[in-house]
Image (tube, rainbow, N blue to C red):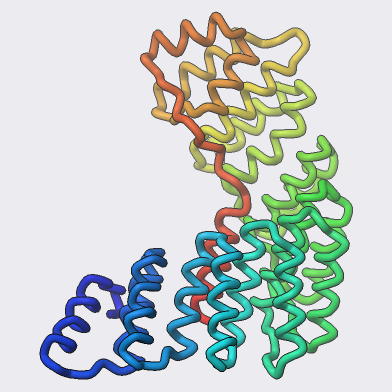
Length: 357
């Protein structure tokens, strides 16, 4: 079960029933958890219904598993449904129940529903933890509401919950979503004032905030600050730093960053390639030959040519020449493949936290 072998767990449960051994709530909860862990909400629900039909009262663990599975899919409506059914059966939610509910709302950008469940938790005897508050702040960030994100961070402190890198990172992410680089710097200062060191994800988020408003000066300051703290930038950091220069057509600066990227032992990816093509397209005059050269080198290096890269190529060299190059290399641009986003690592961390609280 530690490996979440859902089929194996089901097989043993069916064997128990076949041999006249009455399963208890733990037996059913194990199968429900295994199915939910794999994101198979429908099968998990079927086992819950079988459990109830067999006269076995489900426990909080079973409902938490279903809520968590819906939360991972960002289905706040389904997550809320299971929470309400659990309450109707007289079961008391745990901190993990509320936290996963808030996180599900964050994923779907439903800040108001997230606030509803946070308020319910605060009114109950359940004390929210830093993961709960970080999920709430994430919901505010997804909604682009920096003011609310800051308010919830303040409420966290008022509740006696110690902030950590993830709660600060969530507010900085809200700043980035709002394109407020000055607010992001302010929160980074606060974070360091608490003795918490920012990681590459947080710095990349700040670089993205600077890129949103094409603030090259702030972007460079953040990048220098990151390196001075001993935080090694990754390719997303470099791409985020290069973006405001690219939009201004400063292709020479983007090329310098490309060289620095290689010096740091990092390989260009499709995200940085796209930024370079935008730089050549935005230059005056447009740098078609440079764009084609970089594109050819990228293809030779095996970099995936997705839709964004293809669109950047069209902007840089013109539609006709872009089509010639695509035919020359027999490329079919990968559909619906966005460049890597800065928040992906943060979300993975959040899921790990939710699974253990």
